[in-house]
Length: 319
Ligand code: ADP
Image 1 (tube, rainbow, N blue to C red):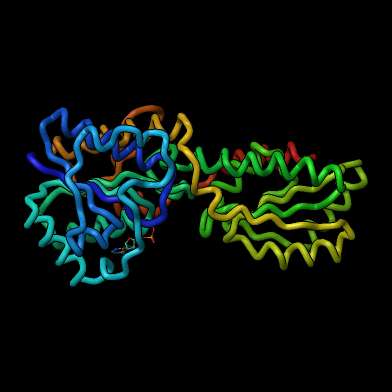
Image 2 (image 1 turned 90 degrees about the vertical axis):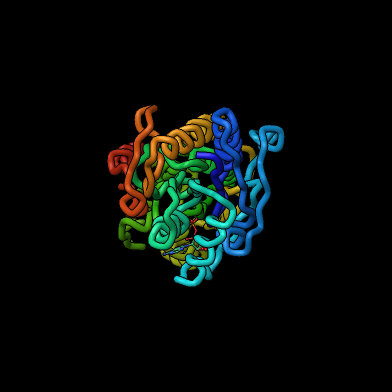
């Protein structure tokens, strides 16, 4: 193998840069050239790229986001777009492609194999942590810690004013962030898309908590589990507790990757190159119990199940 490509696609996640650095340095150590495509699959279709060497990935380890930048690209979801990307990869003499991204990006990576004869390996970069075959996805740990810092701060003011707070965290279709932030932050309530809830039951629990002497009531709400402001109006009216909403939003995507994401970024990048060299294709890299785990791309995008055990523990501790 003489030349590989790398692309970051979809939502950015802290840890993508450490993974890019790892891919480039592992590949260069094997004398393999690395082409970095800019702006996700758009760069693949439009041949926007640069050759990456070891010095170019110096000083990016501690940087959030992705130096290759990212974009959502509808054209890549069409046969024409995929064909164009395949032609460009052949034209550039690329034999293996590493895709770092979430479920959409990895689905696209699998689709590309219908049009291209090279090898494709995915790295799960998703703060939502919704890719299967790995204990954790790149970016999740940093995003959870970022949100947790806000929860701790909000709790101070919530207690002082004896308020109910709804803190909306990311997670359109998955409750991984909410569940971890809620458990780590001692939330009274965690609302996730995987589970239905009734406003009246929450009201009953809020009232009971007030009777037990709770000074605040923190609800961590995954963005896919309902509208924070609507819920706040309902809860304030029915429980009588003064209610505020904090939407954390894109703050959770930014910031420097914490140690854990740098370490799995380094490992996943290195594993990805190793996997290409072994001739594998159509697989997603995972780290399970500290070791490399390969999963079929289409299986990986089916997602991973929530830790219901954590859910149970958080409920018990919220008393
Ligand atoms: P993420 O990778 O973070 O889940 P998206 O779901 O927006 O983000 O996907 C990123 C990009 O991956 C899309 O803009 C598109 O270019 C590509 N993509 C998503 N789904 C498919 C698909 N089914 N086939 C081909 N490409 C896809």
